[in-house]
Image 1 (cartoon, rainbow, N blue to C red):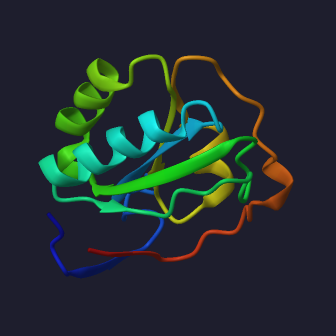
Image 2: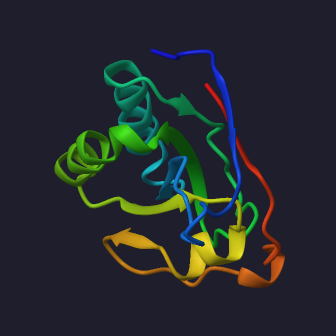
Amino acid sequence: MLVDQSTEISATNTQGERQVLGYHAHIYYNATTLVQARTLCEAAASHFPLKMGRMHEKPVGPHPDWSCQLAFRAGLFEKIVVWLATHRAGLVVFVHPVTGNDLIDHRDYAIWMGAVRPLDLSVLSSRDKPATYSF
């Protein structure tokens, strides 16, 4: 279920607080758990209005393992994160907000389910930019 809308916000509000437009949940897996991860991601995409990314069979960006990204609006955080926590069946899930600063989002605001994995933060920008989200 996918809603086609585009939203853009600045990194901070008038009080200087970081704004959260949405979240990314990255499901980590390997060759042995690929089918399990695909099943989880497809089930999430059929239950919630989110955008399911590609099933990467190599590390991509800062992620040390194969992964699939689930992108969703901030208002869905509780429902989706609780659902992932109760359905991940041992898979590692990395969740972070989208605020317009990739480094801060991945380093300072990270939420892990399962083992914490070492991210390659050197590939992330520390510059604030307008966060744009399309659904």
